[in-house]
Image 1 (cartoon, rainbow, N blue to C red):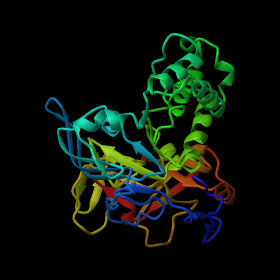
Image 2: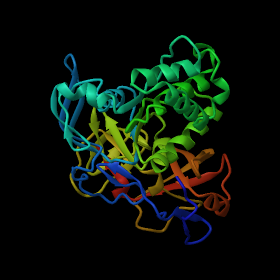
Image 3: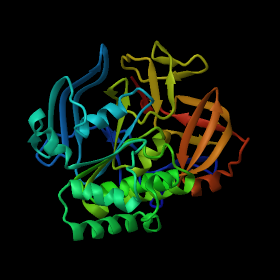
Image 4: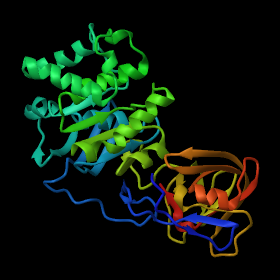
Length: 374
């Protein structure tokens, strides 16, 4: 996430927060990730890449997905975030027409999806699995065979294959055995095979799981610029919630197969008593309205870091020790152990202004209405 346009709001050098950048990203519900302003779910339209209504998918007796309404916008990057078992891969399989829900309606670029059209729609999707399978032969062979299977003529196949490899920086792998190249290069070779087909929608299932740091950074750059460069739609899943927020235009958070209006960062489990959420380690003040749920989440952008306790209307303030200071997608992530482990995102300028260092004591402050209960 680019914070270069952000400005600092300081009462003095002991208080830092980050103001809203020029652009925002949506989370379905959705809401503005920086301000927690709630909006109604985007209205379905002929312009949506996907519109899902009343989707239900089960594995035996277990409900894997239960989605009253979900919209995926076209020509944008959408991230799915959630824990293992939250339904991310199942939802991607549904979006890739590799799995059919038990109930519900799906529209794909305004067209109603049915079993008769599954294969037709599937050919418009590029799906990169967590562990992509490569055929025997060279990287170039793998790409040209895929193009041949899609009816691309001989002369065009070589040109498209070379263009895709060049785009991902793996031209040097063209004549290498696909099954023998490194994990990062294999991932890029499989992605090049998909890109050569020029799909309308690109789906990536946990694409960062087996990459080294260099390959991961290259893939992040690719994802961040894909929609703008190609005019196509990209959907990917990730365990790294901050990564999802940083790279995507829209974020879908999944818990037990359902969407929730939270980025799933600063996620705590506990019990509610008299407008107070008890995690078992600390108590967090909620707003005065009635709350039902066993989890809460606090947006890392809504947390104010201070050197001293704040004299303000903020109801939640906790003193803790800084355990993490790390660069995170153009921002600085601050980890503070204050009974529970909190994460906040601030600018590099804010870090310098506060003179924060590992091991320092600092205060975590956030308003009650910054807490999402579910």
